[in-house]
Length: 277
Picture 1: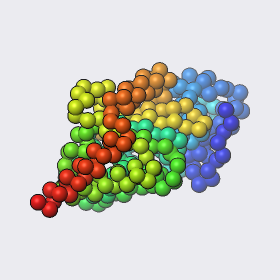
Picture 2 (picture 1 turned 90 degrees about the vertical axis):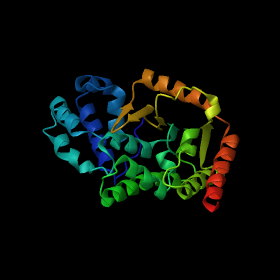
Picture 3 (picture 1 turned 180 degrees about the vertical axis):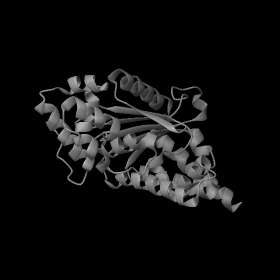
């Protein structure tokens, strides 16, 4: 598969290109290198394409396997310190490269769709004793992620949310009014697709937790699952296929996009009315 054009402003992409050169110089396939590094061949491809960053641990192992005299260990730090929590770094970077993002959110509005006020309330709930400067940094990073929606067509973002994410009052009814109107505006501008799983749907395939699926132009698809302070970016084809089926089942349990928009806008008006009562 041909390599994508390098972004000269991305140290991660340039380091990935160097990895490809070093691997091919040793006449080694991605699968063969992956076997020696205890990762999959597709993982190697994702590092070479800049979809995934090369961690310091892997950089040291690469230098040993490919006899690159410490090159990757020395240059690993030049990828830059991420503004995201450690468990989410790779997922955020992959998200920025994705052609399609399909996300299921059971409890809160998905991060890419959050307003500043909503995100700030979420972070205060996660870290109630954190200094305001920390909350500011986390909120800014989340809003910065959402800039990928500035492009009118890429990535395709399709979200399935549980009705709980709409009915749970985060911050205040004013915050919820603005948050839901923001989501509705993105839907009406044809920038995103959103489906809501109503309470009346009963038990469904997503009761276990959140899920994000990402596809790419020149790399295998990825799945991301997370929990409290932890997350896993998965590339095993069978695992990704299983999570894809889960997402398909969720869309089958959800309201149609048109019905979902009506529910979101109705909830926003209810919150707005409650403020005036």
